[in-house]
Length: 298
Ligand SMILES: NC(=O)c1ccc[n+]([C@@H]2O[C@H](COP(=O)([O-])OP(=O)(O)OC[C@H]3O[C@@H](n4cnc5c(N)ncnc54)[C@H](OP(=O)(O)O)[C@@H]3O)[C@@H](O)[C@H]2O)c1
Image 1 (tube, rainbow, N blue to C red):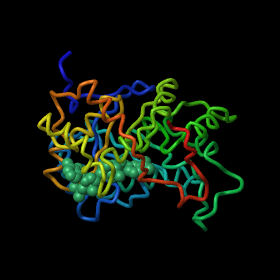
Image 2: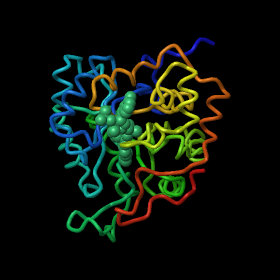
Image 3: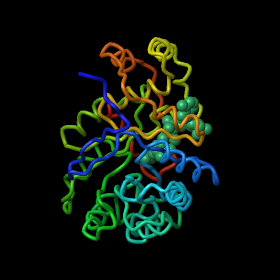
Image 4: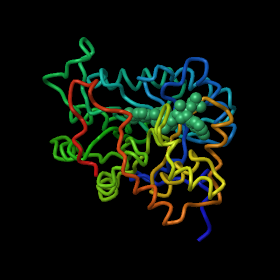
């Protein structure tokens, strides 16, 4: 089979909607940078932008979308409900739509399974948890303001709790999770596949100052392919069936991260990358009032 043209590929969600295989991440993009980055990405051909209320950049992301001139309906926009908004889902989504300057988002994720008390970010509500938040999120697609709902940072244990909750009706379309060769989570990926939940890989390059860029095995494969380590990392994620959302505010990198068409990693190369044994997580749960990772992902 010919290698895929990933920039034109989509993955089909359990709702029938199609999520573009590659998107632009926007976490930690500094003010005034992200507007340009979003515009550059859309002009380079990206059709998926990932943002969140918590990133404080939805307004600029919306401006970048408008600047690009790409019609709204051609773009897949993902945003996320912030932890202190779990009891205020309506307020959360309305705030995101207003900031983005759009009347719907394609995917709305519960950012973390933590219903944090806005009065004290170290406290979890005693009378509310993520199953209550999901009950409220389930109501959104009806209104047309949200096309698909999903979760993020959900481990198997919390997904099981969600499925067993009394008001559970809608299976999340997506679980957006940290995935890179130092946090490959094969058990969680198998579980998601079995449940029909698509996985989007965040920090797919290993995030800021990624140690993966210096990895000898990755460098060797990149050199052999005549590609960059970053492009190899993206291919590894895509060939595992996950969508990828690399973040960059640098135009040349935004373009390079989209040059992934017409070549592929062999099974052997894919296996060698999956076989890297070092482990690290960019996003832990120490800063949250509840534990959300249980070491049950591999
Ligand atoms: N759901 C969640 O809880 C969650 C958590 C984390 C991230 N995310 C999402 O996932 C996105 C991606 O994750 P991430 O931001 O942690 O990290 P990432 O995409 O793995 O890596 C971003 C870093 O890599 C650099 N970079 C990008 N392309 C490069 C290239 N071709 N060559 C060299 N360096 C390159 C960027 O630098 P420059 O920008 O300076 O070019 C930036 O420092 C986020 O932006 C966000 O949208 C979601």
